[in-house]
Length: 323
Image 1 (spheres, helix red, strand yellow):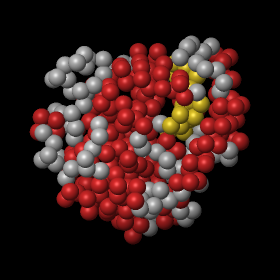
Image 2: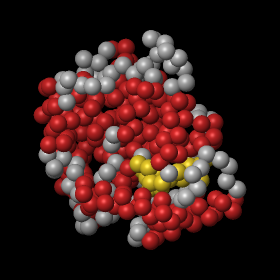
Image 3: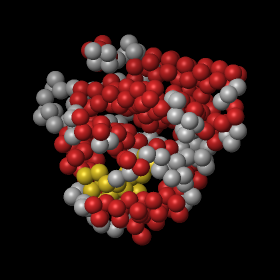
Image 4: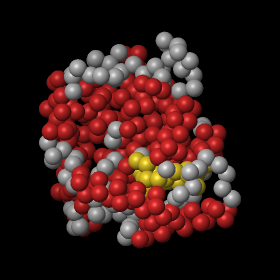
């Protein structure tokens, strides 16, 4: 919906240091990937490929991994699966990215499974839950945009299936799943924290900054405004998480948060710089660095909490974040 107040979005767009350090490079990387994927690898119109993670958030740096998801509108047999996964590996290797860290979830996701498994035990064991959340929260299409839009629309229809024009409708199905995703990320951190093959900064710093932002920027858009149906939420999927947060703050229209929003952006920019630091693996052992990360992360989480608990949000909506 049109907003009369866009000062938070204006802050994000006006300062090139606000999480846009290498925006041109990022844009070129995504465009190059899209060209390769469309021309050489994924020409079947029933298939779509999207990127998530740092590239999906438009924050990809030289140390980032490439997170690719392939979704099909139809059933793929084992031979087709192997060929498509080989194409993903080929794309990843040709661009010089690290091998996929969890081979078990490098697969072709069928749209029917993403919909059917919602809420079932298979939702987690087959990784459909994560694929569905990343599609909604931080994805950018890499190949076959029409199919991507169809997949996105059907997944959203699943979440908003009870709207039916009711004035009393609230998007609790989607809100609960987004909050469940955050709890899952936190639990996964506890499982992986002793994994020596995964750097501490990837397990811990990403959770405290990018993953927290992705989740709670979306929670904010579902909370600060009335969302009565799919059409109200659909434009949010086209925004990066940081843009989504700025939009939610514009909707909230609480001018007293503007200074803290600038601080939040500065802390997030520092997080992006940390990720690019080649000495990071050594620095994370330093007490001073750990204190700096903790202070910045606490300030960021406090800001997001205060946004969601703001008195301008009706108590009836805030209640659903807890109960």
